[in-house]
Length: 475
Ligand SMILES: Cc1cc2nc3c(=O)[nH]c(=O)nc-3n(C[C@H](O)[C@H](O)[C@H](O)COP(=O)(O)OP(=O)(O)OC[C@H]3O[C@@H](n4cnc5c(N)ncnc54)[C@H](O)[C@@H]3O)c2cc1C
Ligand SMILES: NC(=O)c1ccc[n+]([C@@H]2O[C@H](COP(=O)([O-])OP(=O)(O)OC[C@H]3O[C@@H](n4cnc5c(N)ncnc54)[C@H](O)[C@@H]3O)[C@@H](O)[C@H]2O)c1
Image (cartoon, rainbow, N blue to C red; front, side, top):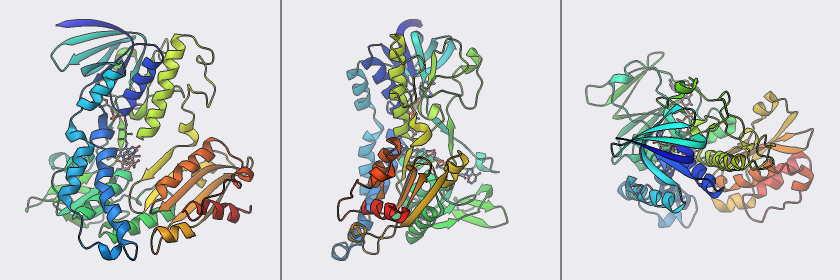
């Protein structure tokens, strides 16, 4: 049976990003239908951010207690893996999205459960989970918030071997004896450490180095942290083939001849926008990646009614940044519908653009030590034509020595010398994730270094490293 529905805006995908886009659209006075094929809340809530951080945090808390004389003596046991998994389950609401669906209803958004595809201009068809087919006409816009899909590397034998993706690793109910991780990116290192601390013997296979987008001192300290937990980190290790071993486990053969054996294989080799099966060809698009402007509008679509946000847009694959894009896009759709001034061609840094995507994206890698970076590295800044300098030092201040015995960390600031403002800041060390937002504010606000000098860090905190950086810079 086919039914028709009219609304102002259709949002496809109810991950964190789609939810936020629909919320802003409704707050802006328009109606919105939100279509979800699986769980409302998406990847981050059930298979990514929340469960992975829930798997990591108890190990870090234990390590923190062990890093101080006095509390160290009080810790006599090891992690209770079953209790960690149980706590993880509570953070995913046991993979039940009733609470999220309730929030959607409370926000005045109409939820349709099913798989959506574009069938023409402002037209969406949904194969609903209850068997109906819905044809939805959107008066103003359609927003793609369909997330991303794991990229599977062309490794011989992988298609016939049983392996874990990040979804399996974040929702697992058993701790493998020996875990092989292919991919030394953010997911790979976080999950490697989580499982090592839960009792697995872990080997990471990184094609080049781990955390390739971070400066070298970060990579070195995180690698040391992994190795301290017994993780074997093999860099410049390219898997050539994979096969099931005779003992029921898995064997990975590396280019050059070495073989690594394990009980489980985790493949975490990146993700790409989920655009397949969306009917983009119906409107003359067939991209691997969409081209969007800073308001989220997809370029090359007559009438400018199609938008993409979050992982689907493929600019920054991070929840907080996708939600930021969703706020800008939701607001601009509502404003354009009302022809509000400044919404047609919004200025950079207006509420209708996600300008920070280009200058000030913060990211934390929740390993122990943590790695935290915002903005550009020295190399990125120079490649962008910025007259950039770098100042870096080891984190060794009163606050860090109190935080942990034998504290080790490193900090770097990248300065645009022509404007004397920060364009990038990186920290690595225990507890540095909470330092990052100060850097994000300084970069986004383009705070002049001579004024930043007057932002005095409280004593004794790890933030004192800001003062040391500015002093070393020459202030
Ligand atoms: C292991 C792991 C850990 C991570 N940890 C972090 C972290 O700590 N911090 C961080 O910021 N980011 C983290 N990320 C990245 C983060 O998970 C993503 O950036 C975020 O989930 C993207 O949100 P989204 O709403 O764009 O997409 P998703 O959360 O993927 O949501 C998209 C939704 O669209 C639905 N959908 C797709 N196609 C259709 C269709 N045709 N019809 C209807 N519905 C459809 C899907 O079912 C899904 O629910 C992590 C990623 C991984 C893999
Ligand atoms: N804490 C966080 O914010 C967090 C945590 C996890 C994931 N994420 C995000 O989710 C996205 C996906 O994470 P990810 O770690 O899968 O992707 P990624 O792009 O960060 O890392 C993928 C890694 O796999 C490697 N790789 C690719 N093909 C390979 C092959 N054939 N053999 C060996 N190695 C190969 C790459 O060199 C890279 O190091 C990322 O954009 C990341 O930012 C964020």
